[in-house]
Image (cartoon, rainbow, N blue to C red; front, side):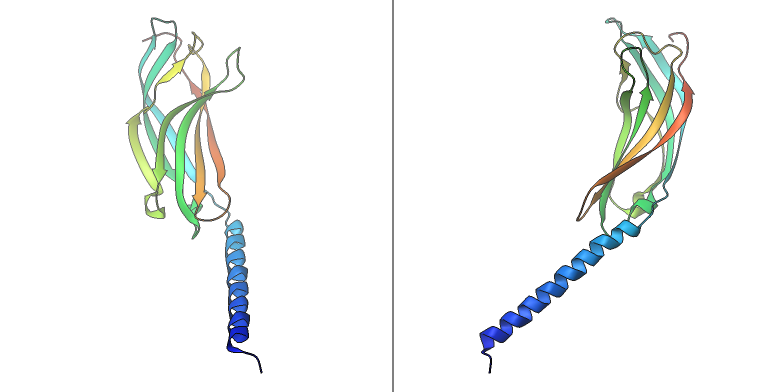
Length: 167
């Protein structure tokens, strides 16, 4: 006959093995989620477009941001960090990114939103490169899971142009 300690050890080892197997299967099941988020951004107004005393261009704009990021949420999603960036090219740099707005979405219930706002962060370019410049508005998101690897993606919305003259 086996002792009580031996039987308890066998039972505990079996239980931990089953628990580890279930945790592994649960983590892998999150990979089968294929999110389909959507977003739309409208530039309602360029509030001002001016040259600063140090020769940098500065822009303030009014935006409508709407997004449905509910499909990013699964049982394993803790929160989603989302931000809107203006992206453009200059002669010096092939990619310039300026964050205009950001937010943290704590739950699926808050993941469908519409916001009317001015840019939260200053849109400044070092130099006089922005007059008449074409730019993209891009919604980026980073999904922060409860367990496992964090992932990020984006939606690019091209076709925006800044004014030719300062206002």
